[in-house]
Image (cartoon, rainbow, N blue to C red; front, side, top):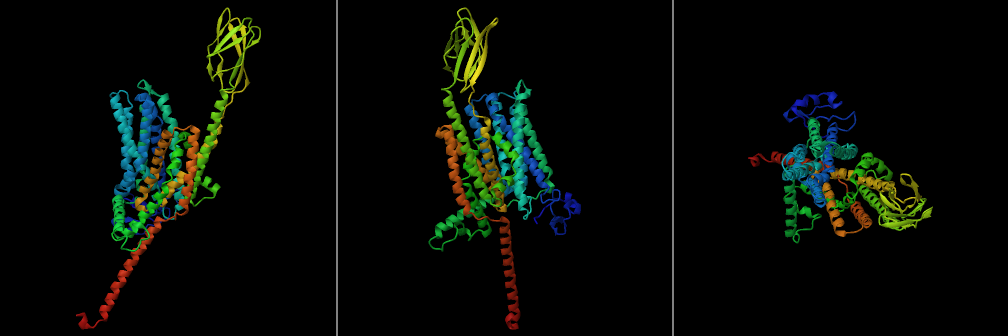
Length: 608
């Protein structure tokens, strides 16, 4: 049972059986505090504290994605930037949001702890939203000030959202006892569902606020940014409200500095003594002369996981190619990974789930390739078989001009030649007779169709009857469903499992750091997209096929690496080193006893 430290203000509540649901608090500790059982949700093994964490994450994701939903439009229509600059700044901001988690993780594990880090960086987050909203008010300064406020706000938001990303998930995992691993795994599914729920709702609401609500004589960007700011304030208030229920692990000191010094000493010591000393089983073991075995073992654990992360950016490179709105909506519906996992009988093997998720994503892009090729082939065919003809029932000959094409239809049921015309809307088509000129509307002439238009003379002019002899060819939008289903199933299995795996395989002192390492794979995935998409210059279907092939190759490499990976239990590491410490104490006590006995057995003069 883990220690739950509570303040004197709520200590009396923890002493009651009603609050602890039958748990006894009978172990006194310093400062008149007690070790108590954490309150559970409705008699389950889920701590009450996770409810505050899940609601906080929902509001924070609503805030982040709601702001991003109108960000590009804000750049183009409000700041009057061109499309290229707007896209570049948008992607730069997105990348910064996934590089800053490393900074937040180091602050949490080394200095402030997860709880305080989340609070302080959430305040920075709120300030960034407020600055961004003020910059969207036309009456505040000129365009230069608007750009300055917008950039400052985005930087603060990037540091806020990126800094708390690795801390919130790890802090939620910390709330569970050692034996409740199954509940903790399900918590990460619920946690991820809250992310997608907030994302879906915000991407629907904020564009409506921008377009349908008018303020300051135009689109209300100030309101579209202000609502996400208000949601972030709510997220902060909700998180602080659960303060008395959280299990708060203290920071472990400057973890990064100790890790770097340990690694540097190991490399240096190996370089100096590798020829003189016997070979070590691991290169980090060369640091045993100066650093404790526990720290060395923890660094080994982190390195082994980070090596597994090397192939993972390719998945995010594919995932970010798709329309996020559809993915978030389907993910919100199918987030419970146990449904998908049960189908593939992979429960209990996180790395296998992740490998299958990568394969499903590759299949999704193969499906997207098929659709794209069909569109290209259809477009090619339609440029040949898009025809139109006219039947003239008028008593005069008629010349018809459709775009750049000329038709001639003789009087008294004469039929014009069949001519292929480009797809488009044709309104105000000119029809000339010997005595008059008329204008008719043909509407849409679609790809692949064969149209017959009957022209008749009425008192008010020419009337038309358009008949579609051959229906227009098209690819129904439902053909996109398979690729989104496959990609969503892959993302659910890959992302949620990776989130939980990163937490479960990290030592207690580096859980936020490893969460940040997991998020860094997303950032590097965006870099891959920029390199391939901008540098390759390929057709869309070829790009899809390239990504699918790369992901299959990467999934094979990842599967081989996962096969040789040995799962570890960080809690068992604590027990092991605790037992070693106890054994050393016992040995020290035994040696003292032996010294005492030997002194007693000595002759008196020897004792003197």
